[in-house]
Length: 170
Image 1 (cartoon, rainbow, N blue to C red):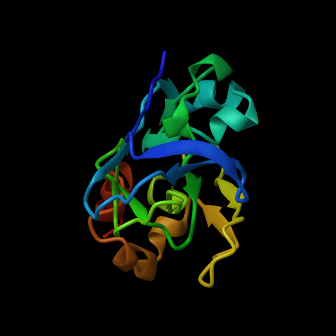
Image 2 (cartoon, rainbow, N blue to C red; image 1 turned 135 degrees about the vertical axis):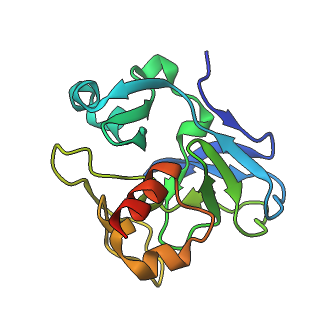
């Protein structure tokens, strides 16, 4: 049973970024739906008990809550969209991923995990970035959203949870 949707214009292949990734099989137009993320809504306490590879596939959907698979049997193609500091996809709302640019066939689909990652109060999230792009931050953290330049880079592509935190911080 798949918990995610991945456009039929993409498929999962081996990726130099982190083992597996999703790639465009044919061109994807700017604004087009790429993926819908799904899974189980779980409190951060349950998330902390998951194996690391499953924790990495969860989205922060609200302070203290994540969304994602809780077993390997639940993994589907939409779960393998990697991070990049120069993404071609962006999050809209909580679970919708759309193309931020026109994407050529053969391109790896990626989005900036900083647009969805928040601190759940159990310590800051940090992940080494492997994207290798010219603007690579070297690390993705649960504090990325606090940077005004980061916020300005992703107008309309910050998760609802991140937008709520930005509003509360003003």
